[in-house]
Length: 259
Image 1 (cartoon, rainbow, N blue to C red):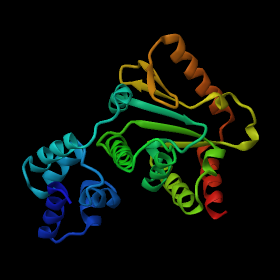
Image 2 (cartoon, rainbow, N blue to C red; image 1 turned 135 degrees about the horizontal axis):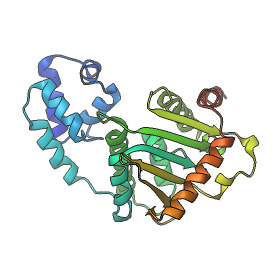
Image 3 (spheres, one colour; image 1 turned 90 degrees about the vertical axis):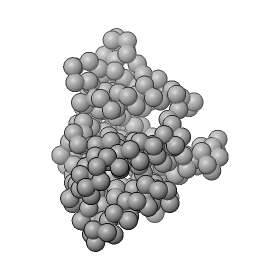
C-alpha cells in the first residue's frame, strides 16, 4: 500500500467513518473509495480536491495524487490523443462489435481481455488494467462527466467465463441507470448490419467539432479528416437504427444474467 492509499485510510479512521459514508459525502461510489484505499486507482484532480475539502487537508491529497499518477505507467503514445479527447468532449459515442467497451469493463473482465492477448507480460497486464480503471474514473466519475452512448453487439455480451461474464453484465445493467449514460444492444436478429465492419468511437467537443477513433490489432488513431469523421457518424446512425432502445437493451442484458 503506497503513501496515498495508506493516508486515505488513516484519514477515514481518524474521522471514524465508513467507505460508504465518505462516498456519500463526496458523491461517488463506495467501490471507488475502496479502490483508492487499496491502491488500484488514484483520485483524479477534481475528486482529490473534493476529498481534501471533506477531510480538511488543504491540498495534500491533490498533491499526493498528482505524484502517484506520475509514478504509474502512462498510456501508450498512440492512445494519448484520444485520451485527451475523452477528457474534453461533451459527448462520447462508442460502438463495439466484439467486446464490452473499455469504459464499462469490470476489473476482472479487463484482466481477462488483456491476459488473453498472449502478447503481454503479467506486469504489463496489471499496468493496462490499472490504467483502464483509472481512465474510467477520470471520465465517468468527474464532477461534470460527458454524455456517453454505447452500442454493443449482442455477441459481445455472450463472451467470457460464466462468472466473469455474469458480473460484467450486472455492471453493464447498473451503468445504464446513470442519467448521462446510454447503453444499446444490437440484437443477433439484426444480421449483417454495417457495424460488422469494425468498432469505433466518436467524440463531440464543447464547440461542436467532432473527431473519430479507430483501433486495430497493434494500436489506435484519432481520425479528424471531415469526410472520414462524417462517414463514421453516418455509420453510427445506421447502427442506431438496428439497435434496441435503452430499456429493451437493459432487459436483454438482465435476461442474459439469469441465463
